[in-house]
Image (cartoon, rainbow, N blue to C red; front, side):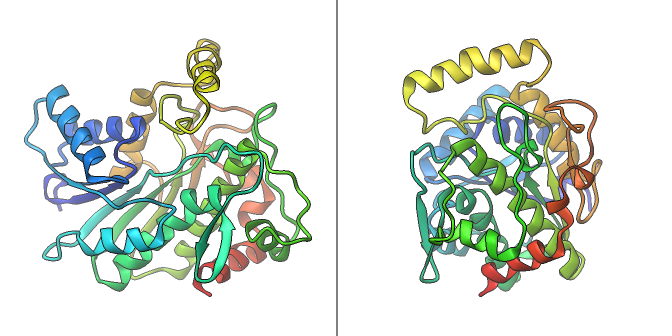
Length: 313
């Protein structure tokens, strides 16, 4: 199938990285996009910005309701997608960090689950599960999950996520009394990206009728709106000073740079089913390499199965 014939669903379409990725894909010949954001107004705004910034023949369809912390909203959002055509590519680009002093939770299936992990992983799982059950994915659909180097830790920024058992992971997500860990927003995003890797690994193992599922990070990228919930002063400092310094020393990149790599992963130029791909060990940016050797949790089958069992219970 030609790129111009494929349909791409993008969640978190109003994010800076997602918008730039869509623009690259349009330049690569893709023409059909479902823009999924929390509100249809946000998706319409992205549509307008893209159409203003580049001259193209792409068809951009705005959709709201893709709130990754609202399962019922996701069900309605998926139900509103056109039913006469299947989706060939899904870019799970939605996410974010909960900047609070204590663990925040999202209710789902009668359980309260840690919120950062929910909006970065479980929301995406719900979207894919709904699409599959409703036969809305093509038989060879490609799914790209937006990973992050925090999944194997970033010195001085994110502690290496490390769970000794599936029970410890479950205790963390459900905030069991046995989990005495103090909430840390940056560590929480690292855990959520690790969980994304576990989810991708299980999806690949399940071999869902030819689906390709990939965990991919282009390296640390600023300007993605992931800091939108920070207090204004802290957000300004991180965006203007923190990331600015990291870019100067080659440890962070612009959305346009990261998006070019994402576009290659989405189109199939980078990565295959079950791959976990990101920056080199100990670095936030650099030549894209296999992440699996960098954290034993990535390939721990007990953790993979334990997280999956929590999702399907």
